[in-house]
Length: 480
Ligand SMILES: [Zn+2]
Image: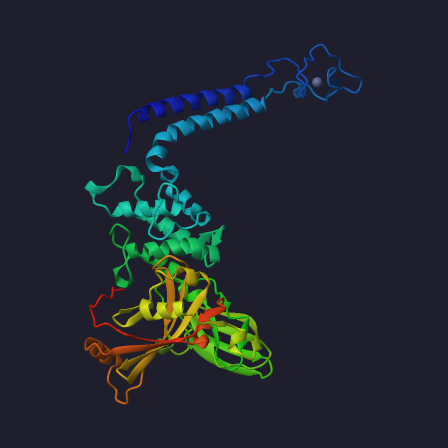
């Protein structure tokens, strides 16, 4: 959007800047000696001052000695006035930019290469919002967005549309990061990585890669996209500080959360546990993995993790890992699970589980709305769901769930594999669908502290047992 008077801001701004520039020139270059001899400290006239016996002219005003004529012929530079002139120049440029800043925001007037370097300094905008006027990353999105709009739809206020060359520059900076956020650092993952995760769809996938806006991919673009895929997120390996004796120990690495890469990486772990009994083993895992119960009082675990670009079942023999890291974890072992996580029983929580569960095709979820006060207390849910046709158990699934806050839809959970109790090899989900359609599907939900332990920072979990009937499909249950 242009608005009336923009031209006057431009003309006025340049005029002010010109005045400032004149002040700078005047302050620095105007007062030349022009043959006059002057003290180079206090500018007292020294034409009449006699030369001393040592050949030095000493200023009678301030005492400064001048060993040569040249030192008395200096140009007087007025630095403070020059600085004031610079400020006036900057003020003029600010006036010139005012209409553009009003129309497009501060970020809208900056060149793309500056915006790219600024990305790590800003937190990403909240999900679902885009603030191109004030966020460098969002401004870059806007410039990519606009590139997708047809000629008639190009908005005037979006500034530069990114050419293929500029897009390559952008991707190169993302692939390599900068001093604020080197590639693979945590900051990189939070800023450049998050930015690319949101925008990668504009560049296509696999064989169908292209520039944002549709231009055909060239080798340079493909190489850059590949380079970003191979940036590995920082490895953050963690577990609980205390585990109860006799239960599997869960270990989590968030490296799998890297949404900017389409690589289906799996990791391989070799481990040695030092404690009462020394134990060793290997395991494959994705985002988290469980080691068999390790008993001892204080266990120290040495882990070697390797990450491959392929899943174990696709891996060719001798394939080198993308990276290997070594980690140490330690935890205490206590005798009872209650020393680790406090079981919480309440009618309110029972009602939440029984009444709040929503059947979404084959996924169970807990609807947190209306339960804010309970969830505030940090209660987590590790639940074993057993499915019944009347009184006959059909199968079961584990669910782990917690509220990440009080905002509906921001809940987080993970779900285990289905276990079928049937003797035959019929598909459990088909059976459940059929039983549900007949209106006979019942569920027993049991709160299991050992499942809730996988939330490493949780110290309260629901225990209880509730039964409820699942309404037939389409009977009031919202979709996912
Ligand atoms: Zn002097």
